[in-house]
View (cartoon, rainbow, N blue to C red):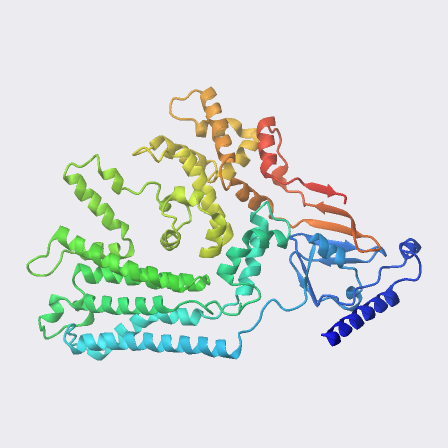
Length: 561
């Protein structure tokens, strides 16, 4: 104990002596008044990063200037290490990176992960081969014409969706994390530095991209792989049920693979498999292929099998076991679009004079009304709990950006369209032809989203055409003018309209000029945003101009610290 106290006392004395040696001989402030620069830090950061989405122009007291690109990572050179970075770091303009943000997995974890993926891959291959061999061997599916080719085709078709996942298993999450940080700067008007992004979205980014101090080299470092095996088993059983048909089990002398697929269940499964395979391919190209997608494939195949049984019960099985030419294509469409079965069920309910109850089976404001949203994007949004236009307009936009990895510009445009449609079309009524007409008239004027309408309302040169497009049938111009004002007010009060307007306005990179004093403290900060022709409005009204300035950053901001 005494030895420990003596060592601590010796360390404190040594620290005091070093501080005296490093301290200047003159009084504090003399060197600053004499014009001598402040001493540089001995522990200069190994790497620096611009923590803002602006282009930084940093000028020191001697007139030297450094330029940092937005969110740029830079290893400072020897002259740059002598700069006093403490003030910039303290104000959040620059972030020091003393160590690399990525760490490799240790040998034990890497070997465990490779072993797990190898076991999963071999299990998937065995299932893909064993199930069709057992089905053909036990007589559940009799293919007398080239049976080896049929078994090989079914095995390859079964394992193909899972193989895409293992081909996808190489993606740097750090790149995706940096991309999201750049996009959120342009989308969210409330964040200014990386510290704001980390404080507001750090938890969500860690869940999707993992923490920066953990493994960020591969996507599926800790994901569970059992959904892939379950979907492989489901697809293999689906091929077995599709090939088990009366035509295949009747002992016909010439039974090929294609003649065996002759009932609604087989064609419904083919439709589901067609959709699932294309979904995996699209998500593979978007870096969005995760085990959760294979859970959706399993649910889809089982749901389609149930709907195929429902279709077969509605149309009835013919005595010759040969279905009509319209039944099998309809079953395939049901496999691709399960909602088609709901339309068929609704039409059947209408035949029984239940017209008052059929509205609950209808899909109100479907996502197909959004321009540019195809079948696979619709399924991807449904997987995230966005089944209609109202859900798209009020869902968490940042959460969709993180989970779906749909390009941000496209996702923002869809939400922008959804907001306009939700404010114009009355979804509570069975049909709203007037609202649809207003949307068509606005589309004819080139207005297809909420921000387009706000921008067109700001430019008052052609106000008459805009009022006529918004007016309902037989409505006087004064009422149409009030309707337009109320519509603009409702759009400005929507939940995500501020984020969408910010995304539109922040298309240009701002320049931030920072001047430092002798101690490295910022004495003046001036931010310049390049002029955008969108702000050049000829005759804006005072009310709409104030609303417009609410969502538009000023062209030039000057801040003196």
